[in-house]
Length: 343
Image (tube, rainbow, N blue to C red; front, side, top):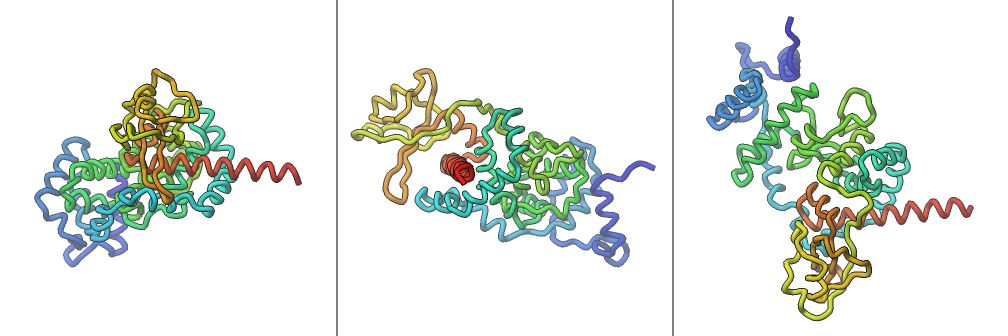
């Protein structure tokens, strides 16, 4: 007998337990997605492109629920907050201390990831710390419902979320996930590092070598996957990320600020009155950040690796808070180790 697909096995279980069956053997619809023309077209495309069963896909969509809360949250992400409000969310003593514990608990996996991928342990820890508080807050929204809702009821980014829904359904098929039980963020991001389905498929690794890529339960897999993501997006080992700057005069006001793609030469920054403590390579391109902090304006210069962090999340505020958290965790851990050696 041909092996059942992951979707078919789940649907059979629902039927056997009576969860999905109505009188006469039909599937009880938990929403109206299965009847929609745009969903039917999506199913036809999935069948034609990937060979997935149209019957199974229709059954999946019949179980999907519209998530109104998702539609509300997607329109006001945390990155929309000003820097003075955004930074304090993540740069807390509690998050820094938890980062030190996560690093200590996973020191071997982090050291191996840094060795194999060239990404510093503190950056990996900070990413997981910002995204999910080291795996404690991985999201409470059903991933399937979230992606269906955003793919078909959020026209502004429907194309993007339908593509992620496509990748999620393929991921379910490839990894034998139950499509209905996986939980994630209000955008459909999953696991400790909050990978979107396309990123999960392309960058997740089985770092603990147990035969599964599990970003929910395996800290090692999450660590290796984050490191692989950064490596594949061009992280340059040993190079800086960002540094504070000071400004002289008003020339900096004419610079393009807070753009994630490096475009400014050190000469242009110097001519505009932007100064850093470190020496800048005349051949590199940089970003200039001008943000309103709690105590007034803050100025930063970002290097290539700063841009790589924005490949994970396109917000420059996100990249800067990851960098600052990484440095705070590293300093706290080093101080803890020094204190232990003096006892």
